[in-house]
Length: 100
Ligand code: SF4
Ligand code: F3S
Image (cartoon, rainbow, N blue to C red; front, side, top):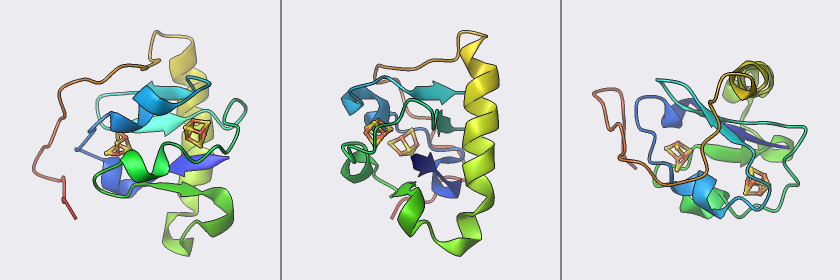
């Protein structure tokens, strides 16, 4: 599956979720997460992210290893509480957002 990592935190550009053919993105107040059970590894979301926050699990930099479990856990719990996101929203672009 693909994984949303640290760079999304405080940014939430939301360009990623719009192109996902299986609508497997979920959000909380901080960032977006991908449901690994639904992601089909199409890679459409990867080039959409302005801060390059999304990686395939197979080439995930080691410092982001913990994000595999985080995406799984957060997407599961957000699924039951209306956290799905499929459309572009105003980005957060908070102080922790580092644009590349
Ligand atoms: Fe969706 Fe494809 Fe990205 Fe997986 S890789 S989250 S299926 S757009
Ligand atoms: Fe986050 Fe990038 Fe999507 S900042 S919301 S992963 S476009």
